[in-house]
Image (tube, rainbow, N blue to C red):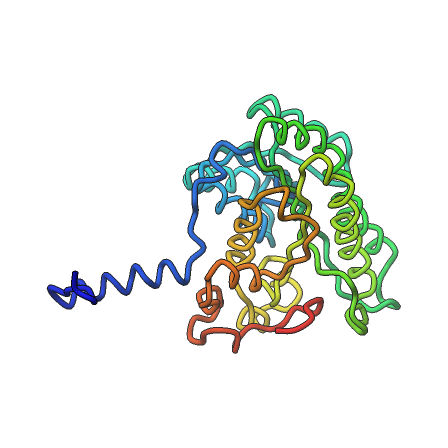
Amino acid sequence: MLPFPYWKSDSHIDRFFTVIKSKLYVMENTGKLKGYTIFITGASRGIGKAVALKVARDGANVVIAAKTSKPHPKLRGTIYTAAKEIEDAGGKALPCIVDVRSEEQIQEAVDMAVKRFGGIDILVNNASAISVTSTPTTTMKKFDLMNQINTRGTFLCSKICLPHLIQSKKNGRQPHILNMSPPLPLERGMLSRGVAYGIAKYGMSMCTMGMAEEFREYGIAVNSLWPRTVIWTAAVENLGGDFFKEVSRTPEIVADASYAILIKSSLNCTGNFCYDDDVLHQEGVTNLGQYNINQSQSGNALALKDFFAAKL
């Protein structure tokens, strides 16, 4: 056998390196989530939809639990347009009108999912409200909204899905709860630009810390995932416009990192607070420039650090 490949033409060389790059730079789908039912809050757009599309490529069943049922003048996408994209990607979709502040709506969506797909295997708590404002300028209405959606919504969805996640493990599957929330412990200064929002997001992280231990006996994994940098979503667009667009990454980096977590053993991967780039580096995905909105630059040079992130 020759020590090196025998190249018949330049096209063979190009094809070889294309394959090598695809293995090194892309978080590939494995098919491990085929037939799994994944309940994702806030999945009509942004990070939630990106995660939905990623798992759909495995052939998963996706429950789109979100509020937007009709086109919004400022926010792109509805639960029905997301469902169409999920079906086109190879998954099965169940769009459900859900405000995560409503126990009745969550219960109804969970019941519909169980009736349609036979159970729930994974919960992704993605729905979130954001208002990065100082203490004097934060209204109590906004404070209550963020805490009701972020912390209370995460607790409530986890509580209602729990019996089905327990059954999922009994059925031989790998049940997960994944919360889109920043790592604990806190570092000095992290909350100074938005105390109210920080309280709401760290409330989600405390759900991770507590439930990971509480649910360990059931074999249910509970983890948190957070982007190292700003992610270009409708919420960020409303906050900063084109400035943030030029220094952001796409939601796909969080989707790929989510997928890497969700295909792991629920017994061995729990209680973790992860950054998206760390997860992908562990999977061998080293070229993070592919996730930059501005493709004229590569790597980490472009991306703006999220203010909850410890380092870039």
